[in-house]
Image 1 (cartoon, rainbow, N blue to C red):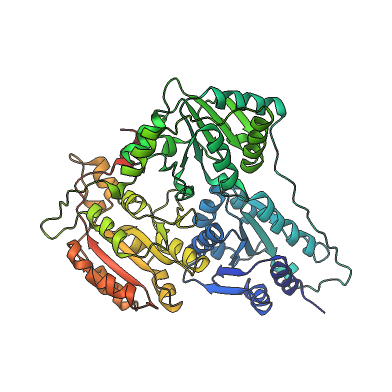
Image 2 (cartoon, one colour):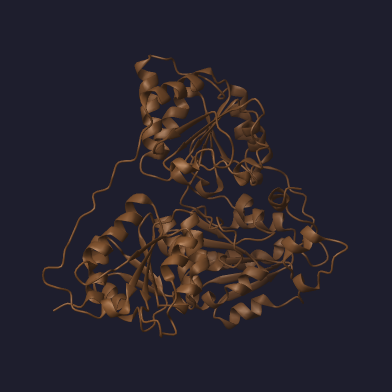
Length: 547
């Protein structure tokens, strides 16, 4: 005799779930235990908001469906910001939440409506007879469609017996669409006519076979290879990769993207961040967008050609078409001069920095560049949101597209620490590094204990300017800033109180303990309370606010 709640947990592990994050309450106690008894790992967070972001980051960096286990009502609402971030990012996150169906319950709310409002897919375990089908459908929607799914499990259903003849079903994945031949012909013509093509690979390019297919088509047509922020690092090992297009672009990257006569977004939204409000696209450039979601094509800007298809199938089919035409390999943008410029000065760390550290405050550029030199190359970098955001995103190199976890689709402050924990658990072979502001660090600080408890060698870099820098620099002089500035605090002492190693940094010379920590084979986090210069709003915020 099996209860529905146990059958749900057993089936999810059998389908492939390996890691579960959450906070356990009465409503999700049993199916969480069922998953761990079946072999899944459960990671207990201190707050459901932290658990949601950990699960989101883990799913992104592992390419696995990750489960978020929640109590009904308040446990679910505590996690909504993280769920919204995951949904906006097309994360394969399965939110398994208990649901109160008795109207008199304190926990009774319309959880399905909230899921839909946050951009997730709302599903429900409808009855004991359909429980196995409902769970399999939810898992398949996550895995095969790349969606965040909220699966509501009514308490009165989960406590019932699973019938011996309960229905089962396998959901066979559907192959991604591929553009029609005439559309591929138009695309091929545009590629052949272009003298300076640039491919920009986005989130949708982190799919099986896409990276290789894009490199092959780019080599065939002479295109340079850029990425959006979420795919940063994808083409690090390609001599024609030009790093991130958008607000984090180095001067040379921005120049090369802006100089393109053909810009092709592959699984990339071509939004204001990636294209700097459109300024990175030349007025006479041709724009092509390839996406598996037809509603994404042309959403942020007009395009000359939209191709509804998966990145890998579309790129591969286009390369084959060029081969069938017997078209010669084109040089395109890949001239000897451009190649030499890319090798000489593409990345921010290749550019000179004038260290302006003074008066007990460290220049955040110099701080981050020095950390880049101190830390091992095999790292996984996560970031929070705030005025500081660009420094770790630009000056900390990453090894590949699984080295940068960017939970910024919802642009919420306070997710960074939890992001770093989830990313660390997805990639235990890499040193996890988190960049946060003092505001975001304090918002999410409950999860510092989680990192200590898990024994994570997590380096937390707090860019501490004792303010909400984005608001201070945006509103500036003439406005009262009393509500967005704070007394300087000893964040290193707070971190030590949580069980971390910690150091206060006011100059790059103060980073010596970090080198010792790295070489010691750490088994607990280190927090750097970096007292940083913050004289003006960062360039990326100027982009965000449009001035």
